[in-house]
Length: 383
Ligand code: SF4
Ligand code: SF4
Image (cartoon, rainbow, N blue to C red; front, side, top):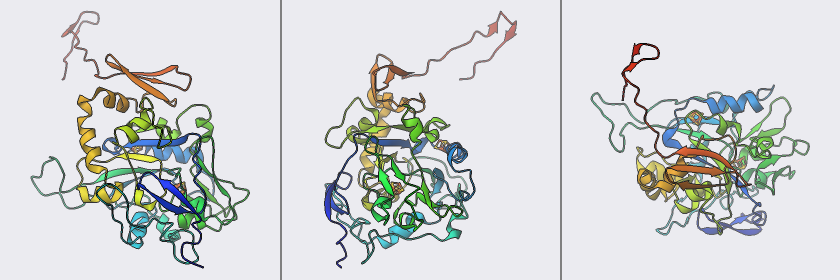
C-alpha cells in the first residue's frame, strides 16, 4: 500500500492556496459555522471555559474534557504540548512568496498504514489544563516598559473545535461515526456508531476530540447546535467577558459577502487568520493575531498573512467599516448575518434582515454637573 493511497480525492484548500489530498470529495456545507477571536482582547478569565464545562461536560468520565480551553502561549497547552508534538513531526513547513504552502499537510504526511499524521496523548497529558499560565517567554527585566513588540511576551489563546472544512477526526474514523452537517458545517460524533477506537483523538492536530473514560467512546464540541438552530451564538461566545468573539457563517471562498461580518473580517480585510493552516484542515476559527509578539512565532502559528492582518488591525480606528465589524463582537446573543455602518453606528441584522444590534462607533461621554442639586452632593468626573 502506498503512503498516500487513502487520499483518493483532490480538494481545494483556500487557506494554503493549493489542492491537497483528502480521503473524501470536496463537499462544502450550505453555510459554514465560523468564529473570529480577537486575541488582543482576551483576558484569560476562563468564563468561556466554565460556561462550556457547566453546559456540556460536567458528567462522569468528562473530567478531562475542555471543549473550550484558554491557554497562555508560549508555554501553555492542553493537552500538554498538543501543538509542539505535531509541529515537530510535520517536516518541511514552508510557504512561498505568494502565500502558497509548499510543505505537506497532516494528510499528505501520514505514515504508511495510517490516514493522518497524528499522535495519541497519554492520560497524564490531560492533567495540567493551566500549565504555563501567565508565564512570559522570558524574564521581565527591571525597568522594562511596554512598546511595540515585547521582549518578554505572552498571550492568551482561546481554543475550541474548529469545525474544519476537512476534519482529520472524520477522515480517520474507521466506523464513519463522525459527520459534518450539510446545513451549518458543524462536525459531530454519532455516539451510537462510535466504538472508542480513539482514531479521532490521535488524528485531530488540535486535540479537540476527547475520550470518555466511563462510556468508553469519544466526544467533542457540538458547536452548541441547539442554540445555532434557534439563531443564537454558542455559550462560549455569549458569555465572553472580553467580547473577543463573534460567531456567524462563512460563505464559500469564491462567493464572499462584504456585508457578512465574518466574510468581511476573514476574506475581505484578511484581518483574522486560521490556526496552523499548514496542517491542511481548513479550520474555521479565525484569529486576529496579537500585535506585541515576535513575528516568527506568529508566522508559524497563523501563516504568511500575519503582517497584513496586524497592519489592518492597527488601522481599524480610521476605517469605519472595520471598526463597525469589530464593535459587533459581544453586542448580541443572536447570530448576525449582515451588517452596515450608518452615520455613527454599526448595525447588525439577522437572517430576516431584522436589526438585532446597534452600537455607536464612539462611546458618548457624559459629564455630570459638579454639584448634583437633586441629591445635594458634589461629584467628581474622572476622565
Ligand atoms: S478541530 Fe479536530 S475535532 Fe474539530 S473538526 Fe477539526 S479535526 Fe475534528
Ligand atoms: S471569556 Fe472571553 S475574555 Fe474570558 S477567557 Fe474566554 S475568550 Fe478570553
